[in-house]
Length: 108
Ligand code: FES
Image 1 (cartoon, rainbow, N blue to C red):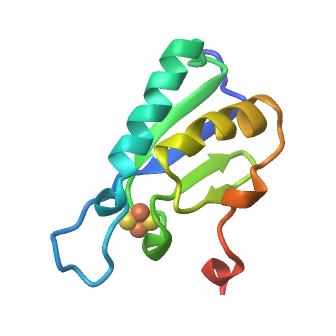
Image 2: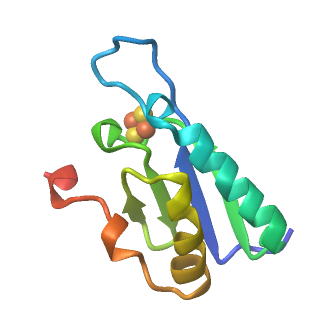
């Protein structure tokens, strides 16, 4: 297996309705993950980049959350329509998408 240059983690955690933390699953992360899968398939990106559904990444209030390594760039409130720009600008172009970056409050 070739070593991917970037690894995308999409939080697909779900919690029961009414849970105080909510979850990315309740906020549409399955559609985000499936859009990444479709785009990776269509663009034959597997091998260059890796894609993994993950458990909770800690930013449940700002979901759906996407984390890209090796940079450790976190995106929040990601929608399926945001996936193409993350792929083109960040994965292929090396420039994180400023408008989707996690707010500073996440890290306080
Ligand atoms: S449930 Fe996705 S970050 Fe916590």
